[in-house]
Length: 298
Image (cartoon, rainbow, N blue to C red; front, side, top):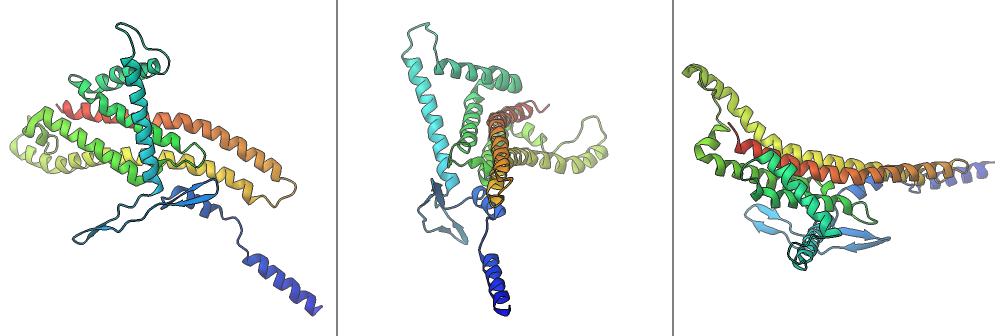
């Protein structure tokens, strides 16, 4: 009996020591950035370079999986507009485009009329290429995460923060060019007219930090909104599929759990296609809204 008990204890200890499926580890591995890409079970290591040292600052320019798919999205966007441009070059005079070029024309006109002109006003057409670039670039990055072994670069806060910083730069430069140095300064140092000098001084002290914080919160909200929505959808789909592996040892309910998880993940994936379009549109539209607001600061 003693030998049987010892054997059972030893067997239990071995089973406890064997690593099982860790859902949290799987989610973290799929969501966080990495220096490799997984394709069909194979791991492709990306080249790693020595950091660039600038004084005490070390800048690592080594590519990661988010960087790779960011360039893939940029490549797809360039190819899209090259195809549309060539389609227009082949058209005869007064001939309307068809097929893909016609669909793209409708989308571009919608953005120009209903997003850019409607929110920015006079001189809005100069910002149409910027708004369209934001939309298609973000859209392609979102959709790349829905293909097998693909990665949504917008699920990285660094990527969305860089996009939001570019939007912030365009917003402030547009305001400075439209309002001039004095008018732009008034968007930060604000004192309501009609008050006595003491009242204006008090309001200037109170409102200046508020206006400055308001400028910072705009790109912050753009970055967090895009990052949170894309990441949440990705984590939810992976968590549902992870249930299949968590309950793989069950003999009675595993097929029901697997079928339910696949159906729910499929439904959420279809929803995520819509969310990918929606989040790209929201980022582009809010950028146009913020440009319009600062150009008409009065």
